[in-house]
Image (cartoon, rainbow, N blue to C red; front, side, top):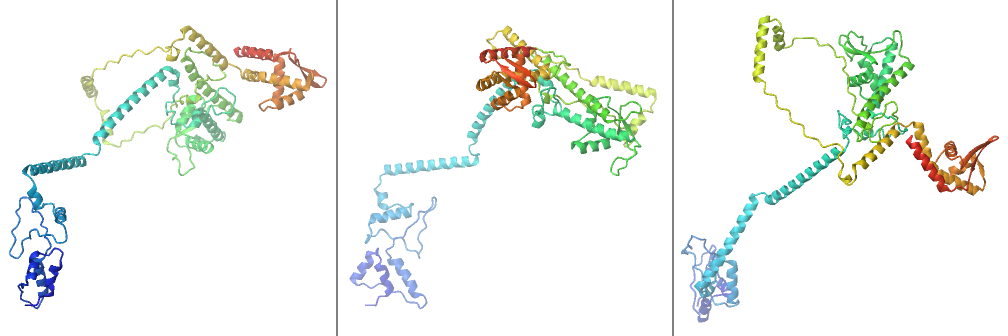
Length: 571
């Protein structure tokens, strides 16, 4: 009996060894021995023995569609059939084979199925593949088309419709507002720049002034008056020392004084407001003493004040010219104010001499800017610089016959090329200006006219009121409360009369607003003037006393003051 090798025991010890090899060992049959080679013999023998007698089950991958499985070659052993399981269950092995090689299925499962079941499984697989194909197509279509293009398109269309609706509503509201507003506001819009671009300190300059109400000027008019004052001062200095006042010198001086730009446009505005202020000329050969300025041979704009022969521009003369300039500015604003009053409903007419303040709805700072007058320009010297100018000059040398023929030809071409004049569009009938708004639809027209007439009368009286009368009305508005405080002072003192100084001190301590003793004394004297039967101011020797009748009801005093106030307002 030949001796066995150690390597022959490895396949026998595995869990899934073949039953044929175990039978050989039991019977004692001798396996065929391979010739031993010195180099690598053991290794080759081990692999061959494992290939022949191994119990491991080779996993075969399913061949691709359209190809047949290759036949085993002479050196490759065919796969072993199913062996009897020694350590593992057969079902577990079949499950492992299905998981590892889905192309192959156990023979028992394939054999046990009927043709109907096989057809059902193939149909299920086909439907599953079709569903997967549809999903893949949908994904590729989404990847090609922009994400959510249909949804965004619908959303954009709906938003566009909303925007158009809002735009139409805004236009309707603007049209209704423009119809209700006064027509004079259109004339008051500045021509050069819109009110949105003008800073707030210029648009509301008249409201921010700490002065009593009167004929205030717009901000741009005030700036122009300050420019005239500065320019007149510089021109006066140069004129008094017999020096020619050029625009370059005046511009530099005005900009140094005001820190604002002074241009030829401002000179034209000064000429529009006060035409008799200067005589403007374009002169050359004016001596210049600056290296960077204009040359002596160039034309320069010169200023000459309009004065009598031999008169100089003194300080009193400067003040007089300044007052004339300010008066002219006020007259320009008055003309715009007159147009505004004429556009009201009902229209108003106020004499300009009696006007002491602007209409409450007249926006002073929106008065249009002054149009500049023409400023003399340097004469243009003809200099031939191109061939076109040479030809134009040569045309003047043509004979009269040639000129007549050319003129006739030009007329014929002009008549043939001129189109028919388009018909002027017919004006659309505008709505009447006195149409009532929707909020006044139930009110009678006569009542509205009476209310408007009364309001116009009140505003006219307010615009023509004297400043002293305005101050008096303000004092009368504070008298009802002062009468109540004065009566309480006399009741607390328990005296029929008090010195005027003591009464003023008590009133100042009890009145709600701060006031000087002189102002309080003026209010008490006005109270004694309006109600002499209730309050009286008496001078006894060197002192002045005030006496009050405490038996009179305070409500009666308040009614009398209100009645007198209404009478004063009508004046």
